[in-house]
Length: 307
Image (cartoon, rainbow, N blue to C red; front, side, top):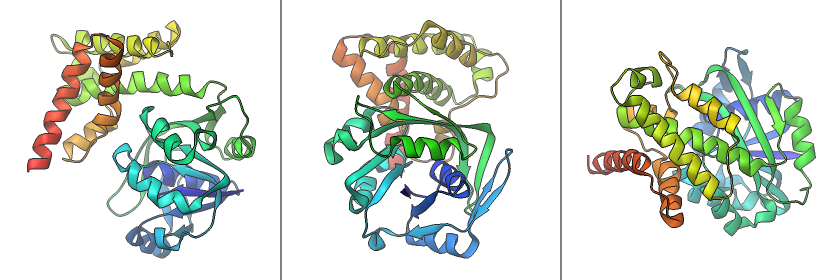
């Protein structure tokens, strides 16, 4: 089984390295500058679960000529169009694509380009960053990966990739309802990103403000309502878990999107908060807290682009 990982940044680099060490045949599709960096220094991962250094197989877009069995996408949502162009030569009749993007909007985009029968659902839960020197820094002990079929048919490479991931040391599970798992995550992530980016603070700091708890819980309820109206209701126990995590006093928890804002970078606001706002509008659900948070990030992007 040949696996192509798009990029060797945080998420793709970490999971690709773990699969490589487990014996998987992994190739990283990277830009020329990253290719030179990896050929010279290897792929380095610093992690509380154990550091890794591998000498990876790398390839650039111009060199990609053959099909791969599994193509793993871990790009940012705003790079999806260019990512699809890059991986197109690697996608054959028997290939499957495992996207690890946040949200759910990308599923329709990928299905329209490559066919729904080739798309797996995937959820990555990891806090990670790419350091300026090219080293990947894993920031805590969470490294969970969940995947599953989006249809009732069992795709050819689903079980082999599941077996490989299970043996890699990753906290891996195979879901029989991966779309619900993805909706669970987007409800949590939208609330976390919306609250911490709008107020530019951690959950603990927000909880110390006069209206912080109302803001967080109001947005969580709105997102859960959108999920339910979209046919993906969250279990009460799942909502309770999210509510506890998102209202923990003293918690240092923030969304990675806040780090993007603080460094003046592009965000996935349109793909995450914007998609949820659009869904609320289409089904006629009022979402004032969510709309406020998205408006804040839209204003940030407008100012960023004008700078």
